[in-house]
Length: 152
Image (cartoon, rainbow, N blue to C red; front, side, top):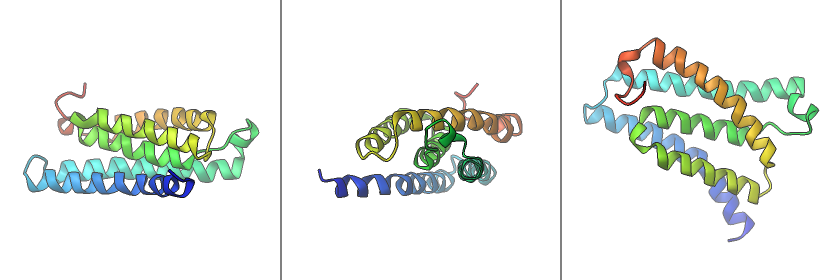
């Protein structure tokens, strides 16, 4: 495939994840498998993740932390990973599909030379850490009754 075709695929990944999240929650509400309060909690979790991802981008632009290490904060990775985390929490039975998709996206970013492997890993570690904290505050500790059955 051409660079342009792969670029189009990469550009569509994040919007597709967002559509899957919104449509999936809407479908769960419609099927009465999720109440509105649970959906709002999951939307709040995703919103917090996205604010964190873009907030870190602005923080890095101001403080130049990644460039000081010879790296580049990967907003692509941060936002995609935020959506994948939210999808995994909201639809835990499909977590393998979401994990495979983010790994393929990372490979595509490497192939397209958007970011280096260290850019992707360093961004993922920081986003993963803050996502874990946010999950414990928004989903797990505040609303333990909203957790899917298989989340400890």
